[in-house]
Length: 209
Image 1 (cartoon, rainbow, N blue to C red):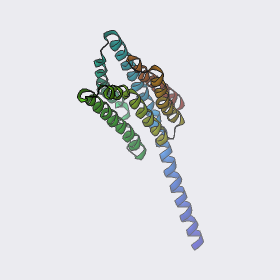
Image 2 (tube, rainbow, N blue to C red; image 1 turned 180 degrees about the horizontal axis):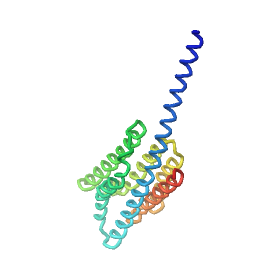
Image 3 (cartoon, helix red, strand yellow; image 1 turned 120 degrees about the vertical axis):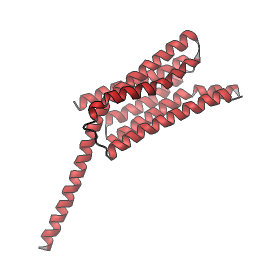
Image 4 (spheres, rainbow, N blue to C red; image 1 turned 30 degrees about the horizontal axis):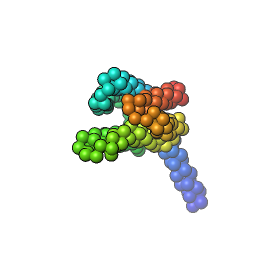
């Protein structure tokens, strides 16, 4: 009788573990499916803003147009809120959603901090050469952080498409930076990242349609 009770408890524990695992996997699939439209949205905005800044910088030869980048998070946040209204009824907070949200929130904070400190340093710096290299390297730093965040999100969601896209964005963006060098051409780094992000969203949407 005792052996039977132990076997029943063991089976119950295994069933509970299987249920938890299946629930987490189901949650990952649902979060990944819903995230596809946000990848497309942010990829489109990244592509649009990078080309806009590139054209204005090239036509006017004024680097100050880079300040337009600060408008993208505001516009993106408002559009994402509108896009996410349909998900409100089915959205459930769990460890997976909190992790992915934390990853992208951390990326946003780090990106804004790096950009702000670099701009402040460029205005207050007295060493022209050091300041020039600091500002010039900002694009490379941001695309690398972005690729890392996307890859980490793919790891959390156990999705190879997002993981590979993160590597392509970060490492590919660095390659483009070193190929194109300084000047307004470096905006194509973000164009590349935006196109990869949109392609990621489309592939994920195809996977979970």
